Image: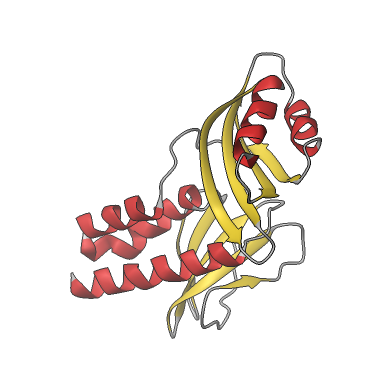
Amino acid sequence: MPFLLRVELSDVPGSLGRLAGAIGEAGGDIEAIEIVEKRHDERIAVDDVLLEMEPGVMPDSVVSACNALDGVRVVWISRYAAGGNLFLDLEAVEQMTNNPHEAIDRLLGLLPITFRADWAARVHRERGIVRATEAAPDELAFTSIGRAVRIQTEDDNVHCGARLNDDEIILIGRRGGPEFLDAELARLGHLVGLAMSIARAG
């Protein structure tokens, strides 16, 4: 079973190599690494690590090995059902441009993979959920937003959203975290804006 690990680590030469070594020694096999955010003022990088566990190895051993390293903090680990099928933002854009008339719906389907989220939904001011991926909640409220923002919830789930137009928004969510980072909000806003532009051009 694949796992997705999010870590904060010092943004200095050798940090990623030490992290990879610790994961390997603890029984994890790294399939992919993506830099999610760089905090230049703090010299910290936030990375998502997709890994497979050796038979009989528990993910706790990888977490402990990572946290034992100086300058490394595990933010979150979870099973990752999408496996190694990671989509980068440019691949999402390519998917949208292949069929401009369906760009927004195509983006909606890609958002859970692109952002390692559990679901995505398109919500209308009056009609409610217009379209959603399989794991989305049955009810989601329209929220009037401008740029992409985090949206408060009453449970331990985390949501963020971006405005499509005056009457529609795109929401994405994770069950139990981690919180959406500023860099992820910027990416979401950018991708939603591109989807709107591609759809209009089509």
